[in-house]
Length: 137
Image (cartoon, rainbow, N blue to C red; front, side, top):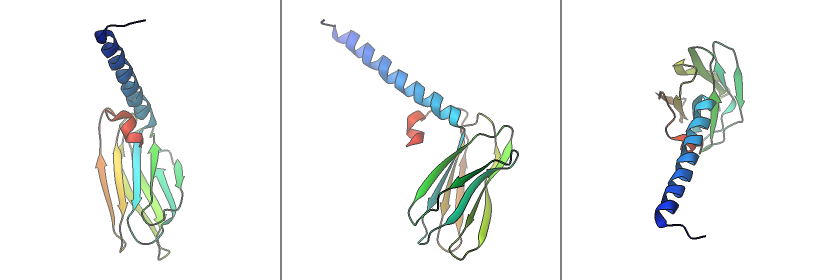
């Protein structure tokens, strides 16, 4: 069956919008993202992400040099989120990545583990996850 070009364009736009908004909905349901990147030259062991108000802890696999891992957390109320790890010198390190993560918030914390015991954490809060599927890649 032959369809006029305008019908095909409208159909393609409807499909693209459907895929995009389904990604926004899925990402919104996942909660706040903690993206941990190991840019040091040594492995980091015993990595975990903890939501303080619930005590829920998410274990992360050991991070080799250059590796990264994402963890999605869903606090039930405003809560501090921390990362704990054991560095190459066998020292336990804990630091805060979200000072006040909220339920339903689309926050992202980019955690970078650097050489020499340095760690950098940048926190971003958005009311809606407009990047949708792109945030999951």
